[in-house]
Amino acid sequence: MNLDARARRVAALSLGLLVAATHGQHDLTTLHLPPATWAAFFLGGLLLQRAGWWVLGLGLVAALDTIAIQWGGVSDFCISPAYLFMIPAYGVLWLAGRVASRHLHRQLRDGLVVAACLGSILVAETLASGSFYLFSGKVAQAGLAGLPAYLITWAPATLEAFAFWMGASALAGGALLLLRGTGVLPRRSA
Image (cartoon, rainbow, N blue to C red):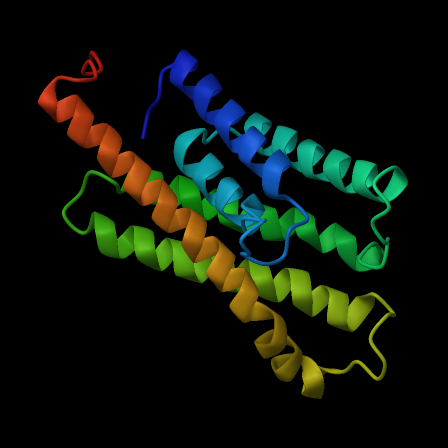
C-alpha cells in the first residue's frame, strides 16, 4: 500500500496518538480501551512501511514506559533484560504488516492479511511473554516446561486487544473506501 507523504504523516500521527492514549492499559473496561501498541506496529508496517517510522514507534513506546515509571507511579516490574525482546516483537509485527501491504490488492488479500495478523501476533506474544518468563528473573522456577502454560495465561488478553484494534481499523478502512466510492471523499490520484 503506497501512501503519499501527507497520508503517511496523518497515519503516523494517528497511530502515535492511539498508542499514547492506550499504552499501559491492559483490559477493555468501561473506562479504558485495550492497548493498541501491538496493532499499531502491524498497521505501521502496513501503512508506513519504512524502517524509520518503526524506529520512531520504538522511541515512542520507550518514552511512554519511561514517563509512566518515572513520573506516573507505574511499577517497573516489567523492566528487565527481557524488555529488549520487545524490539524483535515489534519488528515481527511491522514486517508482517509490510508483507501484508504488498498483497492487499490481490485476489487472496483477506486470507493473507488475516494470516499475517494472526501469525505475527502469536510470534510477538511468544517473544514478549516468553522472554519475560525465561529471562526476567521475576518468575520463580522459570523453565521451558512451564512456558506453554505461562503463554496460555497471557496470550488471550493480547490476542483480544490486537483483534479489537485490527477489527476497528478494518471497519475504519472500509468506511473510508465506502466514502471515497460515494464521492464524499475525493479519490486519490494515481
